[in-house]
Length: 592
Image (cartoon, rainbow, N blue to C red; front, side):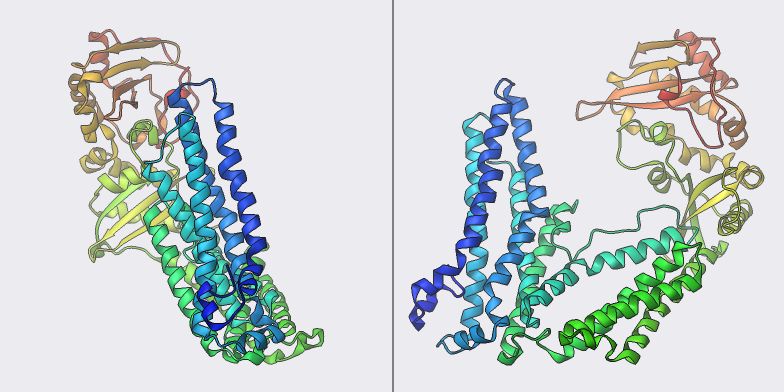
């Protein structure tokens, strides 16, 4: 295998020249893959030699899937970059460029030859060892050769490698120095992480009403992160897209680059200036954000941070461009202006965060609203332990459609004002999430810290409404239980005594009684009264696993208590519990 394709032989390149530059990457790839896919499976079989076949299959399959993930995070990136740098290294050495350009081989043929051979070297070796490891495990009793998830992991690895190779190839084409090409590769693959950082700071620190949601995303421009994409086929598709796009740009750059650029930092003068503008503004903005947030949201510190990081970045880039330490002060005015542009991004983000926090819905613009406790503390109570995906906020957003009234608008306004005052103590407040469904089809979410007095004044009337209760309590959305009545069982716990009973015929009676008692529930009860116990309703889901939902029982729940007494599930012993905060509901582990 070669710097050029084997087909180059017809142009007179000797076979020795074609093969000699691929020995090191091939040997390294063989050693690493043998460790992962020969030694690894053998160790799995040895460590599981006395276990049942099902357990062996589980452990072997887990090893393969886990190995795919770790391989993508490390080996595919290393080999992708290594093969690209090795294949196009001659472009950075003037004497080698002259040698290759003197051969009767077109740039198109050479590029295709190097690229195809590089991709085939890794792909064929990977397939060979991947399959060999599966055959070893199959011979030992763990056969998952037809497992689609495992092969999907193989494809994810393969296209992550090809994307890394394409990025590194483009970096080699637009630069004239391998060290600078390394910096370009880092920039292409990590630039998006800086944007994610700025976005995260905007929502988590600059804005006060965004809560602690995960506003990040999986970096699309980094091939390794896409291996972890929950939509596996989307991750594979994205890496395939980068492979095609970057290789096409690399091919174009190879056709356009001049031979005399070998040894220079950047092969294209226009790219040199564009890159400096992007990088200096980018790092100045990050420096400004770090300075601004380091000491209590101080804009003066943000200015200092932007100037330091921006000017240092600009100076380093001038040094790299010229390969001269004395060049650090070149184009100083330009560097200063770019740093100021980065500072302007900081100012824009601070202003934007203020606008974000100041937004309040106009009642005429909102179709409906969902309210939930932001920390999801009652997830088990509403969703049932591991009975469905999502948390309390997801549950409320799905089922709650509150009409807009004066109490709700006043609650939002008071919450917004309290939250934006960073000096307020948060200990005597509740963090609540509001999902506003606008009439224009948009959905806006805000998270407010609401003090107790405001909750008492504005939230209590909302909590008494039928619309709120029917959306808030899971018992109104219990089709999953109704579909599995034959497996339903009850457990009543009061902290000292637990009574269990399995009777599939009782749930409908319990359901009717509990719904009647919910008419008495409101914020006042949830915040001041303690339940005398709880009923756990469990059932078997379609996948064969048990799920459970907890229902607190208060002393004034006469219908529920009557049901429990009638069916010998009630215990009158009182339970000692800690003080209950508003909207907190006691879960199983808080009893006993």
